[in-house]
Image (cartoon, rainbow, N blue to C red):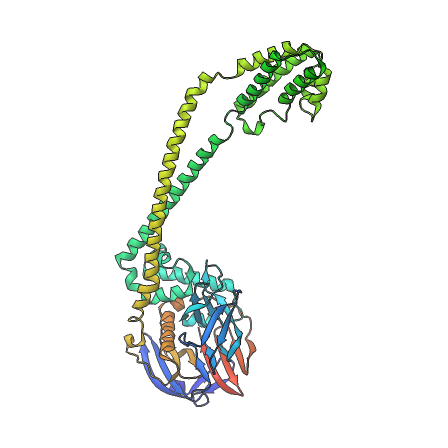
Amino acid sequence: MKGYDRIFSCGLRELSLEELGLKILDEYPLGSFTLTLFSGDAIDDIALFDGSINHIKIRESGEIDVVEVYNYSEKHIFVPHGVMISGVSQDRIIKRPSIVPPTREKASKLPTYCVEAGQGLIGAAFDEVLLAPLDFRALILSSEIAQRDIWADIRRRFEDLSRIMGISEHMIRTICPTESMATYARVAIYASNIFRNAVLSELSDTIKLINKAREVLGSIVKDLDRIEVEPKTERNPIGLWLKRIARLCVWGIEHFRDKEMPRIAILADLYGLLHAENRPRIDNLNPIEKIRLETILRRIVSVISKYTNISTEIISEHLREPRKHYILARKTMNINIPGLLREILNIVSSVDMHREVYNEPEKEIGNLRREISEIRGRVLRYLEEVESLYSRITDIGNRIRKDIIQRLGKYICRPEYFGIRYREGIIGYSVSKNGKTICVEIMPTNITEKLWIEIFRSIILYIIVGGKSKTERVLERPKTTKEKLDRYTLTIRETKNKIATEIQSNDRTVYYFEAYI
C-alpha cells in the first residue's frame, strides 16, 4: 500500500493520494497483477455515463469522427474515453474523456474513432455501450494515432485472439463478420468455452459449405444466362442477308419494266444491300464466316463488273463510301438488269444453305435450349433454398454473438467471479504488476456497478491479450495538448512509454487517467 503514497504522473504534475482526496479502499490480487480500489470525495453536479442513463442520447452525426450527444438531465455528464457505442451504424469509440453539459436543444459533439471496419454509415441512434480494453483506451488518447492505426490494431487483435485461443481465424470470422472492437471485447472475454464447443465448429463448417454452394450455383446461373442470351442474337447474319438479296432479285426479274425510274430503283436497292453499311457486321462473324462473306461479295462484284464494264475496284469503292451506291445505280441504269439479277440470284442460291440442311440441327438446338431453361429454373430454386439456409445459419451466428455470448457475460468475467466485490464508494482504481503502476484512473464521482463491471472487463482484456497486440506510438519528444470542455480544461501529456490525461476546474482535479502501456 505504501507505494501509493504518491501517484507519479507522466509530466502533468506529481500528485499524492491526499491531493486527490483519495483513500485506499481495497486491494486484490488479479492473476500476476494487483488491483487497488480508491474511495474519495464525489463531485455532486457530475454524473457518470455508464450506458444506462435514460436522459442521455447518442446519435449519428453523419461523420465518422464525431457523434452527437444530447444531455436531458440537470447535471453535467462525464463520458470516459474508450466507451464503445454500437447499434445499427458503425461502432464508435469516444477518444477523449468528455464532460457534457445539459443540452436539451443543442447536441454536444464528441470526437470518436470508428472501431468497426467493413460496416457502412447509417444515420441512427446507438443502443449499446461497452468499454474498450485498457491498453486500447490508452492508445486512443495519443495524438500520434490515426484512424488507419485503429483499424490495423483491431485487425491484429483478431489475429492474436485466433492464435491465443488456438482456433482458426475463419471460426473467429464466423462470430465476428466485421472487424468490430465491441464484438472483439465480447468474444475475447466470454467465448473461450463456446469456441471449443462443437456447435461453433459445425457452424463455421456449415457456413463455408453454404458459401461454396452459393458460389458454385451463382456461377452456373451466370453461365446458363449467357447460353440463354446467345440464341436471341442473330445466329446466321449472312444467311439473312443473302435471303434479302435473293428476294430482291426474284422480284426484280418478275416485275422488270424497261423504264428509267424502275431501272434506277432496282439497282439502287441491289447496290444498297451490297453496301458496307448494310452487310453483316464483321465484328459479329467468326473467322470462317468472314472469309465466306468476302468470297460471296467478290463474286457478286465480278458479275456487276462484267455487265457494267466498270472495274471491280471502282465498284467496290462505290459500295464502300457513303451514298455512292446511288451514283453507281445512275451510271449503270442502261445495263441488262434481268441478266445481272439472274446471275446474282444463281450465286446467292449456290452459297445459301438449303433449309433442309440446317432445319434438323435447329430443332435440336431448340430442344437443348428448353432443357437448359429447365435446368436454370431448377438451379435458381436450389439457389433460393441455399440463400434461405444461409439466412438461417447467419441468424444462428448472430444469436450466438449477440445473445448467448452476452448472456455468458452475466456469469463470466464479473468481479465477483474473482472474489472482488463491488463497493458503492469506489471512485477510482489502479492496476500494477511487481510494484510497477500500469494504470491509474480516478473518476469525478462514485463508479456505478454497471460501469465498474465494464472497467473490470477492460482490465481483464488487457491482461489476456493487451500486451500481445501493441501498436507503437511514434513520438520524438514529449507532447502536451490542452482543450476546453465547457467550464473544464482537458490536458493530455504523452511520452514514448506513458500517457496521462487530467480534467480540471478551478485548479481542482475532476478526472485523472495515467497509463504506462
